[in-house]
Length: 107
Length: 107
Image: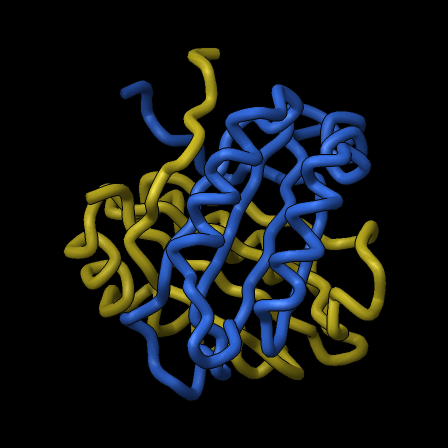
């Protein structure tokens, strides 16, 4: 079994201070050991038709599902989620065990 | 600037042989050097409300945007995309330069 992933894509409401949210997320994942790695990005590349209005992706990686479960119920995450939820117009979340089909060569 | 990500989430049409598609994708990314790494998963975890009907996520990583552009126009990818597109009921694609906010510790 591979790593466990928590993938979130969102469209933020107009006028939302996205930088405040990404900084809050940065602090959140730094403070919680269960999060193995975290990255995010804003799509400014793909076709509107394919993007479906979504603008931002957040990808978190956990060593195992139990770590994700611990993260989800962590008080800091619960608090952050409330702030985050208030800022979004739409969201899709996918949580899953990852199958690695091509591994990056050692850095 | 971080790595470049090609992130695809889909809901497949009913009756589609998903395993054939994931095997095709595995061959595709193995054959094309521009793809640095690739992983995928099927969500059987998150709430239906958050999942919005989407079932599968595919995440490809490239060292730089130019590698992604090369991948997109590669004949094998063009051919695979036609097969893949025929199998999906809905899709969201996000392409973006990734900002790493928490780095995994060395394995």
